[in-house]
Length: 216
Image (cartoon, rainbow, N blue to C red; front, side, top):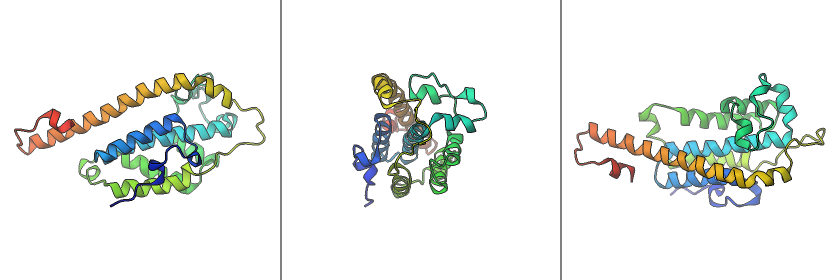
């Protein structure tokens, strides 16, 4: 039996320095893993990583990020929430920006990129072969190389654009947005999974299979 990574067992552990949005995504990943929807759990894990990287960049200093961003208007400096500020920044490119700023190293970059290609794989035969051991192995490595790493701060930047106090004021609003956003994403993933299973069974002439049964 696979041993569950500490990251999934101890989401509230301060060593991981997770915020509510990241915890919410990882809890969804746990639920999907328990349902054996392994390929879909990759999306929830990806969400938590992207939020974590966004927070790390903001803590390091958004001015540093803007200095390497070609289209600076893509980043909404006046956004009231993390989601609003990063809405127009490509998530895949974000990983390259983080490495360029030395917020993550090349190992972490490659691990996250691996996750990206795993979740983006449209080959049904390959994605259905993803198992719990693969998910847990990847999480062990991400735990060590990302989530347990301390946040970096640019000591030259004495005035952070987003302070802890200002983030606290937005926390209630962000939480409400996240609950609505991620709940919808989770249900959509499960529904897609159910539809896929229903279609697969139909092709095999399992006439008694119902869509509701597949979804459950």
